[in-house]
Image (cartoon, rainbow, N blue to C red; front, side, top):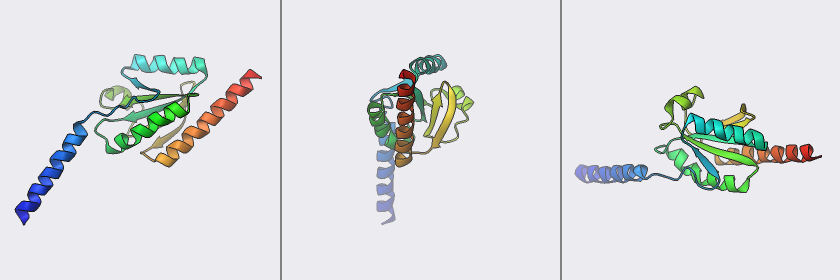
Length: 148
């Protein structure tokens, strides 16, 4: 009985490890994957010129909650084109991520003109959707006000 349990546990663990090895697409939808600090600065500058609020997702490919929320993040990037969606892999850009004091993944930052407006730590789908919708509404309102 114990041997049988051990075999099942090993099988489960090896399948789980195998699943975690599969790369997920962190850049689906209209999400821009940030690969360097220069790439980050370019996208922030682009967002400023376009008057867009940036949603930056500090994530990791091995992180279960990050993997779960990635499809929603990609979907939201298509639903709200008035915002710019970025993803940063904390393992690939460790020093850069540390400069943002990332202590947990996923961590979402909301930036306007390069300045932090809000943040969300964790894969809380309803809260992420709520914050993104709020910022998209404010971004759209600002665009309408500027046009007047």
